[in-house]
Image (cartoon, rainbow, N blue to C red; front, side, top):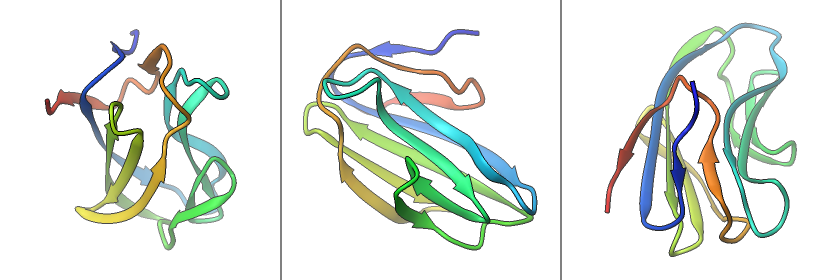
Length: 113
């Protein structure tokens, strides 16, 4: 299954997942295409915590539990917001406009504007 191409507007990417204990280095969400680099956003799990790429900490204590991940990408405004279980956990400027598309097929896609 192929992801959805998009180049403007505000997009919501939503999914449910489970993070097994001792998960480290697994990518849970990836938005491809950006002016700087190959991706606009990558969210990864390292030792029970979610990180933006491998740097900024997004959330902790995700080991052995189900959670709802919601990503809002405001392409025109140049920002990405991450929610876990309905609580905003992270905001960041994106990597610039590009040929954007998703690759994680477990996400349900909703265009907001």
